Image 1 (spheres, rainbow, N blue to C red):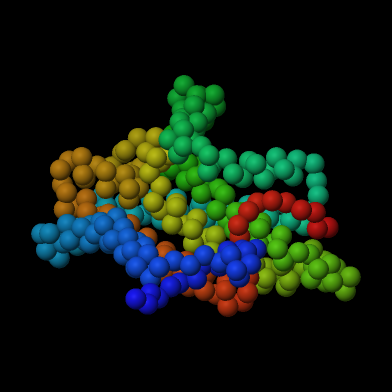
Image 2: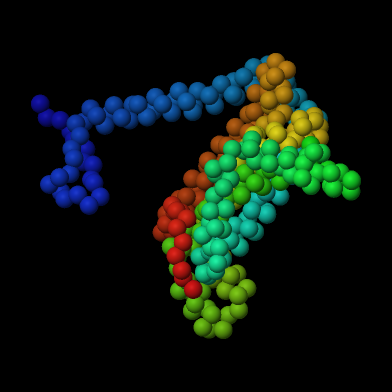
Length: 300
């Protein structure tokens, strides 16, 4: 009986040592993957939208246009806006410094950039409470000057900035390392100054990597729950973001409204995945190597 086989090439392996797998193994693996995606991705997405529309379109639009929901949407957009703008500026500056120059503390800076990936968002929120809370290190001074950070919008923005801190940097640093500094050095020899080199040489080369990082940063900012939950105080209409508003509605057994608001975040996730795929395709079309590491190497 003839069996179709699929060849799996091993990096560095000779053709004689290439592995062959029976035809049925491929279909078992494909079927398992499809089943997993269906159970853990497609069905939950379907359930979110089905539950959101359980009481009809009128109830759905009433839930997502409720003043409390609109306030949560507004605060989510504000927190995401400041997080994306500030982290983009920092990501550009840190990637430029790390990949183009050698300086004391370079490895420490790279390590600090990774900290939000290793610290729980809840712990991050607690750190801000210990710093800016009423009993915190700097909290009394801010309170005496009528500056409210914890249980206010500034605290939410700070917590969101912290958890989204590495995304732009993590995309740009390996990309700029791979590209090297030959073009910047050529522009410098031709008499260009630092800003001219950045705007006309560096930025065009990293524009798709930058957009990739901004998309991920924005998605993470809008979906953040843990750190924001700690510093917000859950004040309806004032300090609730979309994820917190969903939690409150769910805890009140208002399931249809909770899923209606959650569908907005689900829609955002789908749009983010599409945008991420399109930008990833542009990466490949321009033969840009996707970022994979944060290892530093001297270039200038």
